[in-house]
Length: 380
Ligand SMILES: Cc1cc2nc3c(=O)[nH]c(=O)nc-3n(C[C@H](O)[C@H](O)[C@H](O)COP(=O)(O)OP(=O)(O)OC[C@H]3O[C@@H](n4cnc5c(N)ncnc54)[C@H](O)[C@@H]3O)c2cc1C
Image 1 (cartoon, helix red, strand yellow):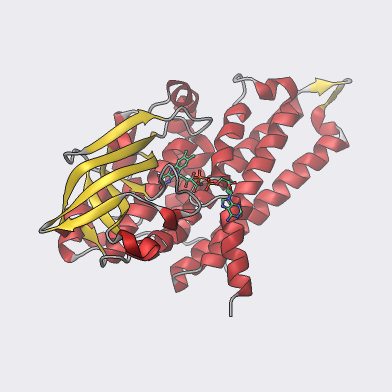
Image 2 (cartoon, helix red, strand yellow):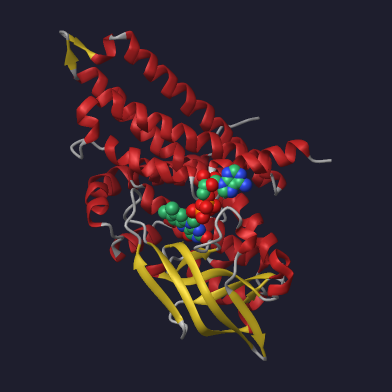
């Protein structure tokens, strides 16, 4: 498989890298400490086009291929994994949802605003009692005339506070279970839609995450995304895009942690030698670099396959699994190489260690990826 980058892909990657190095890296520590996403930063991100990465050109987007998208998410994650997941969800789970399943009216209404970042998109599948077993969700959207009436709670909604729309999955026909789930575009500010308090998270702290709940919230029938009762299939198909983003995010965190560890190992002296002169540390660095390389090849392969051939759940899950486990391995080793200094906020590896953790949890845990992979291996 050929991974040589086109001129466009190099340009996209370099634009993201420059934004990450010059703008994001200097503020990342403060964003983490303040646990907030400044509106000004979202605006700047929009101006650079990152919210339109996967939006079609006719709606004002960049219509990037999946590899360009992965490259941008990777570069941005090297500086700020919280902003990276905001961009990733917006593109892969919301823009893609409307592009793939939206009506002409829905595309005309929402894609131009999403592509320019005028509004941010969120994706809401999880519930307090329905995570890996996403088909067991209980939030209801019962059809009444021209509307659906929503009741129930959804949890862990990334970007909920600043999202203009949320793609919500709810039961339209509760008696059918997972086969009675539908997808909807729900506007922020809908009467009966309430936002909970922000979650106090371990990492990616600048990204907003909170519960939302519905109490007799009325959503127009025109906001149904795809066919009624098709929602569960839609949710899973979208995650095939999103997991490439999380894989790329994990890669970026791993690379950042490795870079810091390499630098530190050449500076810190013990026993009259730099750490990098000890073979035990050299071998750690070798393992970290090797695993990052393997993860990068898998994420890029998944992106290229996805672009060329559509649904590729096995390869996408393999890439997300390896990249997220690599990010945790590398960040852990980076802390170890820093010794006590890796355990305090003076060095960024402490943040990378915390940020890496969630990549093995959201958009399907590592166990969920293994379920997808083994199911594919054992089918038919
Ligand atoms: C910071 C953050 C942001 C998030 N953002 C979003 C978002 O924007 N939208 C959204 O919809 N969701 C979001 N999520 C939710 C996330 O996708 C879920 O947390 C995840 O799917 C796991 O669900 P759970 O937390 O309920 O864990 P559970 O499903 O309860 O799992 C607990 C443990 O049991 C394991 N397990 C469960 N079932 C099996 C099984 N069959 N075999 C083996 N092991 C199993 C899991 O792998 C895990 O280790 C977010 C989560 C976090 C932490």
